[in-house]
Amino acid sequence: MHLFDIDIKGKFTFRESDALSAGTSLTMFEAKGCKIGIGICYDIRFEEMARLYRNKGCQMLIYPAAFNMTTGPLQWSLLQRARANDNQLYVACVSPARGSPPGYVAWGHTQLTNPWGEILNELDAAEDMVVSDIDLKIVDQVRAQIPTFDQRRTDLYDTVWKKEN
Image (cartoon, rainbow, N blue to C red; front, top):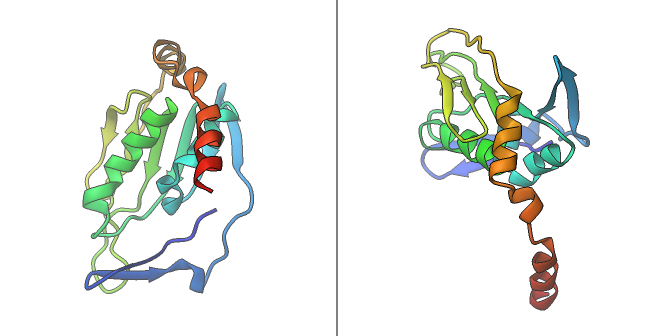
């Protein structure tokens, strides 16, 4: 849905919009009783999109992604843990292994994070695979113990927005 158009001066410039167009809808499916939302790479930066999936009942989000060597070390794990914690669901980010130049070099580090924001599995940069059972009861437990979605004060958001605009 979102395209990776960035320019980090002196380090990295990339414009997906030069070759691709953004999606226009959310993609969800169910597997073994787990409702799963799909995003791609750059989508993980948008908490609002993850929240839409959560509001639609998703218990897991999957992001195939290829973070680069500039943003990967700082933000790859942080964003996964944030989306899992913010939305109280599992997040699985699947990355290609790190190749060598010439061409695009991915950070790697496929990762599975639980609804508490705890990393359950993380690979390094080499080719490998994670196979893991997840417990959907943990999603329910986290949501019951810390009911942020029931306590959300969207009425305040509207009030502040109207006063500022």
